[in-house]
Image (cartoon, rainbow, N blue to C red; front, side):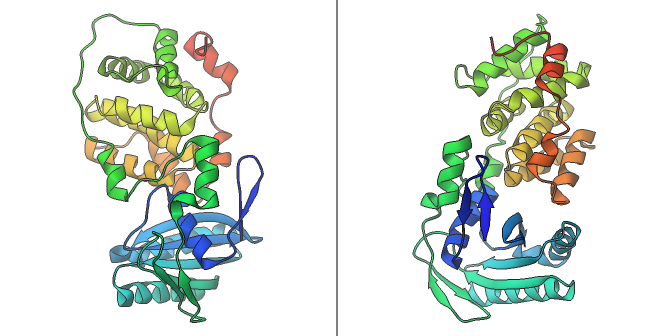
Length: 316
């Protein structure tokens, strides 16, 4: 199987060891106690989805329904669990669900960990081997070079990014262009996020929904850096304003192909407000439906439209 990078370079994942090593790069974090489904079409990776072993029932049905909607030709099922019996049972049950739904299963794999020097086993062929280092997998290295994406140690490590910070009050209004130029400087590594900027952005987004959409265009300079910046800004906000900026986290993460981070941001927003912002809900549903980052990118404003909203070129 292959995955094609943004520069159209294909990366081949021909062996179970290379596929397992690639899973953290696909997800953005190291999966544990989970089943991962790799959906394939024309021998290329269509999407990768993860389900907690503890809640695998309906989750598997949803994933395979999405695979059918996107005309997946087959799937690979990988269970990662410290207990071999639990992992093997989860993998075989998930594979059986796929086949009951009319989807071909090409491999059913088990490993206790995605880290190197653990064993893997194909539960159907009885082939076995040792896992490789996910840190140096071709996919992880390529994504690190192209977009700066890093791999979190766990899903819990992603949640810890959303720890609340001090808030700030602001008295003097600023123009959208000045706010955006400061934001752009942070995204490009030339400034640090502040609680004051968080308050300015939250107020501006609340007053002008078009400005929120324009900030997604600003994020396209570097989606991973933008997502990290918006997390820092959201941490200095509370309630509905926090959820509004978390929407920008979800957008940047989804457009950057980091579904794991986007999902954690949605979960955090659910704890921040009684009702999720509509755009966040739409992006979340699109991700669950298997919509690709390239498809999502078609709906963000063009640079020209964003500049008109912001009031000028934010890069100067």
